[in-house]
Length: 72
Image (cartoon, rainbow, N blue to C red):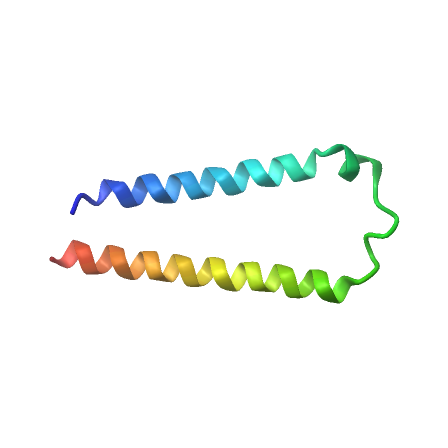
């Protein structure tokens, strides 16, 4: 299998994350400030942690697939 497809997929995911971060950071609501931001922080931490766990698991699966197909 062509390994360059993995680099393309990785690059697309990386660019999506970068653009999403900028869109959130420069949004009007974020620039104005949200007074209720520091309320209910527990649910925010759970969501953020779950996103990191999913991302790390997906990255490890992609790495294992890359290693498996590059050996063959």
